[in-house]
Length: 94
Image (cartoon, rainbow, N blue to C red; front, side):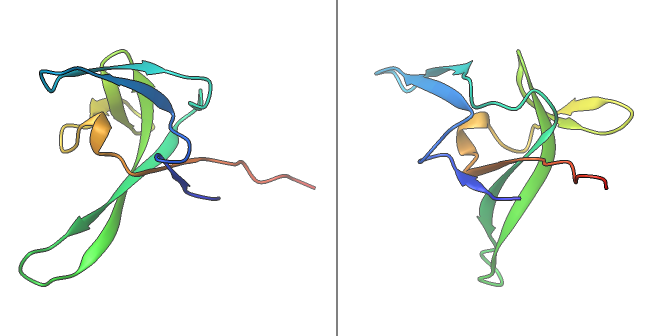
């Protein structure tokens, strides 16, 4: 799997307005199946930075964390915070 930088190819189109608000729309890059999104998060106490990532789907409400049982809003980050995404490629069987 290869992570894609949203600056190079995003899974949504973002329209920003002068008042700081924005509107997003899904584009043709967005996977229809669950996919990964991530961003680098720094810890001010330790100075370490790590990639945090989630398995998500894109709904009308934005990103939702996906589990086998249900989906939950990805409340910890806004859709505009995401830095990388990765479609999940199912391994081929022989």
